[in-house]
Length: 156
Image (cartoon, rainbow, N blue to C red):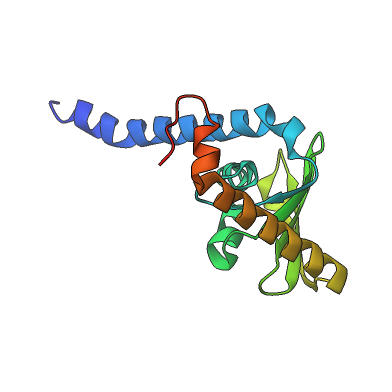
């Protein structure tokens, strides 16, 4: 009888924690839906909005999670959120191809993954320009002039 609380804790506590993660991911997707339009860079460090949304989508949909475990996160994504279905185009610019993920909010087992499809030359040029822009912005953030223009941050 003294083992009952330990047994209950061993089985119930993980279920509660999984439920919290699912609720957190669902909240994050809903809260950031308005910012999800357009092409977005996906980077883990520091985590971009697109990365956080794709990670949350994977937390809610096991097929999406397996896809990202197998392929890795894309370089860029375009998301078209819907009421019950979402479409996400994942661009792997270094590999030269893209995939489309069609998710179903109510039935994750109906998630579709289409691709790979080749990325056109025009898109490759766009991604290269976006990557160069990100590098320039990161380099600018490291300069003493940029640091002195941020309130509360001292120049190096």
